[in-house]
Amino acid sequence: MTFTRSKLFIASAIATTMALSACSNANDENKQTPLTASTPATGEASNLSERNAQQRLVTTLAEHFKKVGIPAKVLDVKATEVPNLYWVSLEGMPSVYATSDGKYIIQGDIVRLGDKQLHNVGDNLQAEANKKLLSQLNKKDLIVYKAKGKTKHVVYVFTDVSCPYCHKLHEHMSEINAKGIEVRYIAWPRGEQFMPAMESVWCSSDRQAAFDRAIANEQLPPATCKNPVQDQYKLGLNMGVNGTPAIYNEDGVYLGGYLTPEELDTRLNN
Image 1 (spheres, one colour):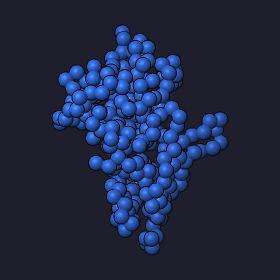
Image 2: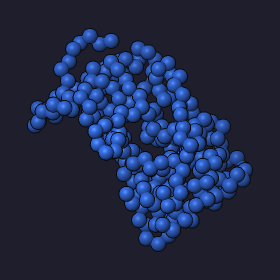
Image 3: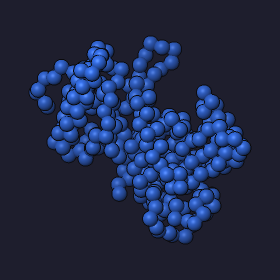
Image 4: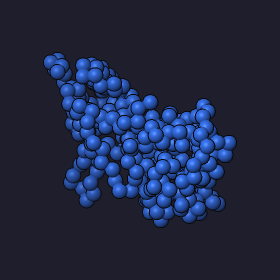
């Protein structure tokens, strides 16, 4: 299993920058006339044309990736509001943008101007994909801290017991739960060296008690078993996680890294 962050291309050497509220991770000459987001057609024919355009893009990207030795598998392609630009979801890697001819890949954010607030073009598309991925999780594979009283919100948190900001967040678990927020922890070791500690937690008969101890810097005895830690780590990569904690609501919207109980409650209610 590789824990180095494939952020992704450009000779595989682009450094990931981390927010202070999270712990870091360790030429096709055939011309096509694409259907663009700015000039949508309508009806069954337009839907077929769009599906064909997306399939051509998937095929073209696969060919280009293979030429340069990039082990990337396209999971999904969706048109964006930007003409001739598609949002591309990749297996085990952050999503990217691609031009409709598949010749150009764009990493990072694309922001729309003109409104009172900046709008990230890919946010809704990524959230939609995230929601689907989160819905496929089995709750028994997570560590759940239930809300006190009525459950108003559920959040998913990618966490690592070695992460100071995760420790800081966990210190406020009682306050978070008291606000009607259920927290579901997902394992996301930030480096291969942290894998054993996370497996020890997930292999414990009482995961919650084991996590409480490990997040407080107590050394747990080594333990191995059939566990979901690696699968959860890969899930995080597909969702664009690059540090812990990484907090998402049930709709797959990224809320932030470390947040105080008040900040978390405010973002959920907004």
